[in-house]
Length: 230
Ligand code: CA
Image 1 (cartoon, rainbow, N blue to C red):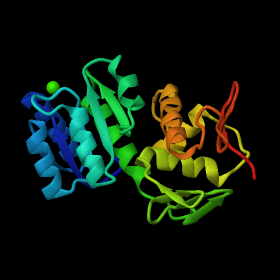
Image 2 (cartoon, helix red, strand yellow):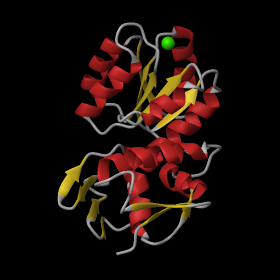
Image 3 (cartoon, helix red, strand yellow):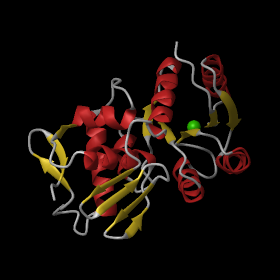
């Protein structure tokens, strides 16, 4: 089994669930911190600076979305949202904060470990990729994790960043949703292709002058998406 280290913060109000997740993640080599409500979760986050946060949506007091917003303001940390119902996921990804991934309850702890690994892997820049990508009016600095559109800096979530970098590295190439899913996740697991659409929507809202008529990230009907050529 691939060894991967890192600090994972679990914010979840069900102690049994925290215990199971902690066991599996620690066995996989991660260091785990846990908090049982949003306020103490944020406090732990600020002190420990985890590499990834597993965040329950339905928390007592401050809910998961508010917690995510606060964390996003402070750091570019990958967030995996844990939701009780599948129907909530559209709402989650559709939100501007853009969780990097989500897991619906009930889930297998094994699946959670796989997701944590995938999200952490994609958060690290690959060695063989160019540090700076310039595609027309878009400039991407992989090392510093920053993006400029027409000279204006835009804030992207780690997932939106990976998505844009994959597309802009090869302008004109049509990517299928599955290929984009692989690009943003580091490797293919049984993901949801419609997740890509939700992230593209958020990305367009941030970089396109008119998201309804995109000039950078174009839809390729029946296929997926491509970055516009020159
Ligand atoms: Ca809960």
